[in-house]
Amino acid sequence: MTSIDTIQRPLSLAERAARALGRPAPSQPEKVCLLLDVSGSMCDPAEPGIRKIDALRSVVRGLTAPAIYAFARICKRVTRETIPEPEGGTALHVAFARIKSHRFTRAVLVTDGLPDDEDAAIREAVSLELDILYVGPAPKPDFLDRLARAAKAGSQAHLASLGSTDRPALQQQVRRLLTAS
Image 1 (cartoon, rainbow, N blue to C red):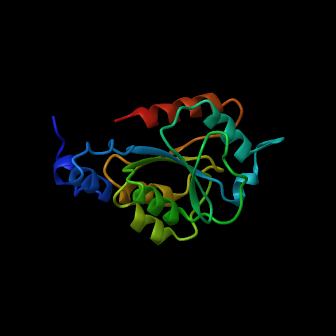
Image 2: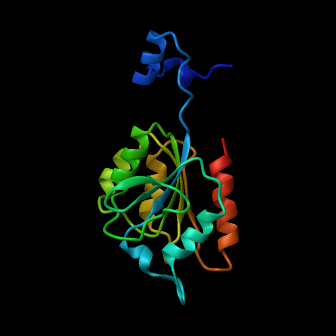
């Protein structure tokens, strides 16, 4: 069965080139990615003796994610082993623009704070489905609920934790969200 998205979506340059050459179209792009906040605040402790970034790395290390992106001032694709050290601001709008340019339609976002530009982040989120896991101090910022409401239907924001006793549950939650249709 063919989905409406497949029928209505314009062909990419690669698909048009393959068709012109009489070759099969390239495989469909991945639909969901893991989007990790690696801004400067991820150096803060998750608990005594362990930084948020190190706790997050331990969560991600146990996952099989189709694609992982890390963002601060810029956004780049990384692997479980190459999650960078925290630095800079939280350019969430840049991250959303990057993953959309790579044709992702869903993201599991793990963040500990607020973006540098809330309005730009909301504008970029409109065409994405987001599962937002907030790993900062309680309570969860209202902005994250507004972001989920602005994104595609089905988007949600959740309060999570990088504490040592909570990491297995967080890993399971991320795994479930990455494999959800």
